[in-house]
Amino acid sequence: MANTTQLNEEMLGSLKEVMGDDFNQLVVTFCQDSQCRIDSIERGLAAKTAELVRASAHSLKGSSANMGAPLLSQYCHQLEQSAGAGNLDQAVSEFEHIKTEFDKIADLLDAI
Image 1 (cartoon, rainbow, N blue to C red):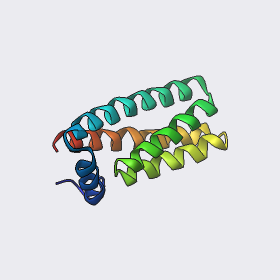
Image 2 (image 1 turned 30 degrees about the horizontal axis):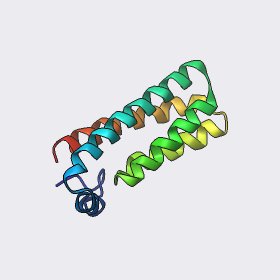
Image 3 (image 1 turned 45 degrees about the vertical axis):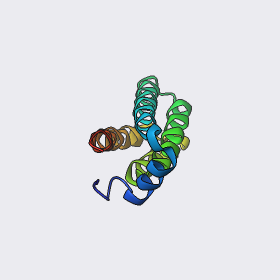
Image 4 (image 1 turned 135 degrees about the vertical axis):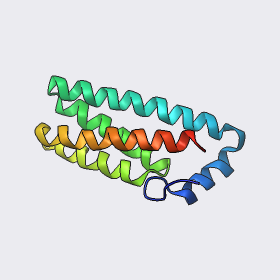
C-alpha cells in the first residue's frame, strides 16, 4: 500500500474502515488543510512571528499523527519546539523537512 516509514498502513486501514466511502474526502481535506498550515508556517517564518509558526506546526503535527504520517508529525514537533523557544533560524531548516515530507505523503495518499 504505502511506504511504511512515511505512512502507517495499519492506521490508514483503520481510517478506511471507519470512514468507508468518505475516506477519499478525508484525504482531500487533510491535504488541503495541511497545505494551509504549511502556508501559515511560511508566512510566520517570513514575518518572524514565532507564535504563528508554533501554532501552525502544532496543528499540522496533530493532523499528521491522526492520518498515520509519523515522520511528518515528528518534523512538526521539532518545528513546534524550535518556534516555541524563539529559535526561528533552526525553524527554517526544519520547515524544509516538513515541506519535503508533506509532498511525499500527499503523493502516497493520492496513489491510494
